[in-house]
Image (cartoon, rainbow, N blue to C red; front, side, top):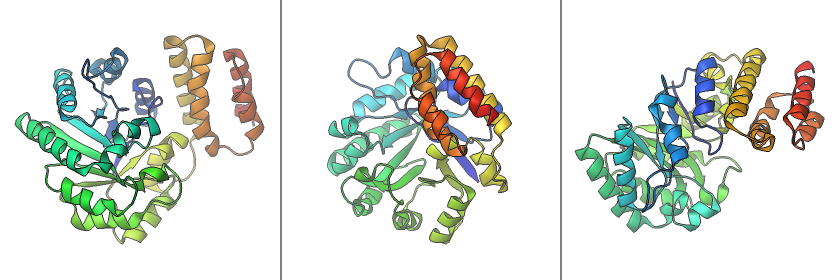
Length: 312
């Protein structure tokens, strides 16, 4: 089984990637949080730093691009090629209201004529310049049946990999993924397929395979792997025990790294609190601690609560 690490904006930057790779590893591809190129620039200095090879040593990283304009996508590829990248990913899955209002992410799925035109341009460029371009997509904007037309469009182009999150835009991350549409992709897609969506355990993976009546050989993990960093080992070996010793090593490494690059305390704590909204699912009986943790404004107070959780 191949396992890809999904991008989560604001969380899975190079500090998190390096910490996870050092302590856990066993990831076939990491996908960086999207860059959104425009007329003036293809990426911000902060995004360029995040994608710099110097900050991603020993990691197979795929930059993700969010745009609905082929010329902006191509300019971004040019700049990414200068950084040494020969594989990029087009984001057609982000359900954010501000993103979709601009016709980007999942919002681009709604305009199939423009999507077809843009894909024609970017794949022509990618083919000429030996750049692999994968696509991460939802199955539709308003209706899942949009996926039938979208699949026909994707099949026109040399998509290096098609990552399918079988929800429509309005689903966001709620409810069960619509697995029957992934089954349709299995039967009809020309590109290699990657499944993404609601894999939080080996049980979830096994249920998925039973529903599809086939073994899914490549999965992309996002919320599941953040919530439980031991999930990769669980999927590969069936061992469901969370390695809490390694978890706390990850926590401490991230916390110390964020303290080096961020200030004041509130910015450090914002990042740690966001991580704990996922991590809390791997702990029992810490609801009171989490409520206190989400209110703290000083690192000293945060550390007191962390010691309490560790001792539980």
